[in-house]
Image (cartoon, rainbow, N blue to C red; front, side):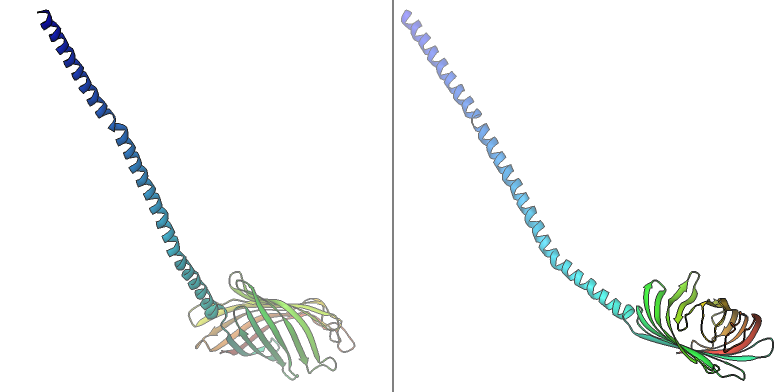
Length: 303
């Protein structure tokens, strides 16, 4: 009986030991793979992230390389467009000539024939102006002046001009021919007044300033009013036929023209004029100032 009890206890203890060993082995089996699986997942995740980063860098590099030729082509295209614009709009040489002749009479019935020629040639930035004026009073010899001016564009609608003026008056006994240096501006003043302002410096300490301004007012596409103002200011004059200093002459007028076309334009003109007169010299008597109305008609050609 005792032997049986010992055997039973030994059998029970062996069974418990076997069961405990199997449970420990199962727990160790289930517990050990966990770190290995976690490590594998991390490595896979890191490999995937690195692959995405390398792909993004490669894609960016490809895009940059592909964009470089496009940018170069765009730059070349812009330069070509700019060159074409300069050639067509800024570098093109053009020419325009205006010829005008009008007959004016004053209150005393005395008449004067005034003729004008103006031609310009060049580009938008650089031009040459040639201006010729001729006046012939009844029963007198004609007097005229011619200007040759270089014109340089310096701002929107404005040119600076410089050159020479030649004057000839066959009614004088001396100093019939004179030459002056000229500097001035040409362009559009505010409210579209076409303006020419010049400073003249010549022999015998002659210094003068002229201002011419005008504006077109369209009544219809063909019937146009043009108010205008011409001023001549003398700063100094020690010549043989000296004029009085200050505002020497002024003319305020209104021209009404009908444009048959853009090349032929007849007109009528009404103006009020002021003349301060001349200084007394060895070659001329002193003359007083006078005011007068002027009426006339003329024709203008453009081509």
